[in-house]
Image (cartoon, rainbow, N blue to C red):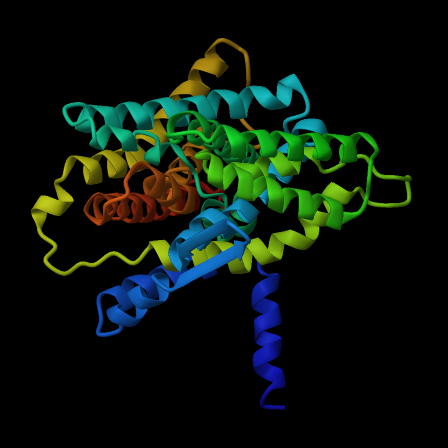
Length: 392
């Protein structure tokens, strides 16, 4: 009886739509507390544990932190790729009318934050590498905050938020491919192209065996990792080759089946672990110089100010030109509250920060900016949406 009750509470918690966002915030807070306590040594030692995989002369040796950022995040991007493919072919992004609003909004949510970051950091070429950090939205966190409001928020607004965040992620993938790739290994890329050819054949033949795609995907991931292109992109590419077409009308497609089964592992495992590994910011010796650093300010104002202005302004322009309209049953104040929530960049922003800067000092500025910008955006967005809710 004593064991059954906690298990029941856990089951009820994981049934909550906001559970993923709550868990994400809890692990981030735990990392922050550990890094600023006597447990800091234990926390950092955990992240620095060396992990190696070797087959003959082929060797991948990295600390645990990089296995999380390069390996587990590839699984996250694989899930994002499956969602993007489904939405484009069958879902919220499958028609021009449905695409107009998220395209305009996502474009504004990328351009204006990047511009604000540039204004703060244009004098330093090194700092400028982080221009894309405030351009990303964390779907899990933003949707988690929105879900806490329940029926006070129209369903159409939730759909709009998901669509904008998905296009944000797609843009982030393209940005990583073009702007955060340094040297290239032609041999690794050549083997990776062969793996792509195998995936294409599997897709054309509509092969429904998961193992065939996973084995080829792991080979592709290793090749991309060794090529110099960021390894997480292999997850997206693999997702695009998973068949969305079912074998028969009675059966669910392989892509949908994998997406359904993978979602809880990513929401309750991969993302919280990533947050735990990357949110540990040491506050020791923190002073105004850290908070007033151009990177911290660029990220903070890019997320909190840039996102809300960019999304609201570009949507207003689209509405004025009669190219799109607001989500059904929602007001401009509610839409503005949703735009504020897109400033919760957390996971994606931290991830791009790890690609932009390798040294701990610059990453500290990034983490401070991301954490503060995301927290303020989440709180303000929640309050605006709570205030804007129609009285019952």
